[in-house]
Image (cartoon, rainbow over all chains, first blue to last red; front, side, top):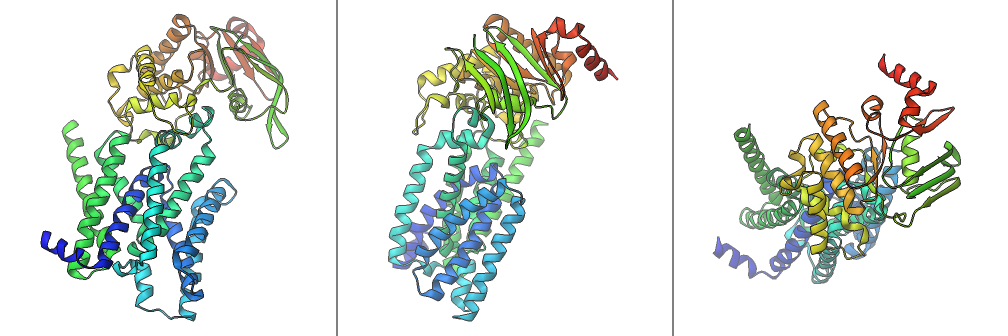
Length: 274
Length: 234
């Protein structure tokens, strides 16, 4: 295992993938707990499809992918939150936006470059995707996401647990919901190249779901979510390297196994209590 | 005086939901707001909490209660029932009010939280997970959280809904204790008119076409109260 690891670190592109992967996994797992509890999981999924659309358009135009998808996805995140309150049911709105942008992405790609191996990489993740510039931007943005999360931790808890009470306490609930959506958008764009558009939302949802089965305190759930996310990332990326499977899919596979184990642990514990 | 409403009208998008409500809440008050569904009880509550602005009339708060310091118990949401958080974490979140953008809790917050848990008899549960508590225990934890915001005025939205009879009785006991021993004023919206009537001092009954405001005894003897209580009995 260690020798594989050493071999992997001798490739600069893998080192880049490692750094970005660790940071994105951290961001995604931290935000994921709030998103899952607030029933916002689908927003993450919708946004990843939007970022695929944005990426395809960026490629066709010859623009740097991150620079275009970052603002586009952030704006859509804000719009999705707004729609959620309006007449259109939010799950339907997300479905419209997500399949719509996926459709646009595929049309644009097939008209320009055609469905190539690259496109497969966008969809299911690739280790080769990160350029040096991407890495610097990713590191900066993920650190910002993590710092904001820590500073606002208690308020995010209050807004997640009970919006009505938080509102009556003078917490600007709408602002924090917006903050959550924007941080999620940033995380998704950063993680998309590696995880793939189809799979990035799993990075947000799985560790949170797993941890909620295991722990009864919010802090423990957050910490465990971060730890589980990192462990699954490492195992997944090593498998991906060893067996040449797509990175995103491998990480999702590991996460799925861990979730399954957590469900079993929960069942056993409940059985003992009852 | 903690709170005075002078002929206030609340509504949404220029459509009045309730109009010309006048009431006064003093220290030690225990007011129950009853009425048909859709008559505007929740709207009035939102107005008192400052979440919506009155369309006309005035709400004046006493010096002890500035607008931002009402202890509030909202109706529980489904998400909360499976929420992974300890009792301590939940109660502490009531202390957020005084914090700035960087919101970490200090020792004093933790002491306040513990003191309020003791008042409600849930301090032994502080490390327990909120989702594993009974409905009655959950409500008491949420009241402890509300008390962290203030111990002067509590606003409760349907506190006994969904509780079993034992839980309901216990919750009323807890509230009576808060009101009588600690002098906390309570405003409560309730469907459980018959259960809450013996507990409360004053009743505000909002109906679509008329309003009753008076002591619990007056309410029981009024034609209005008799009709509503009788109607509820069927």
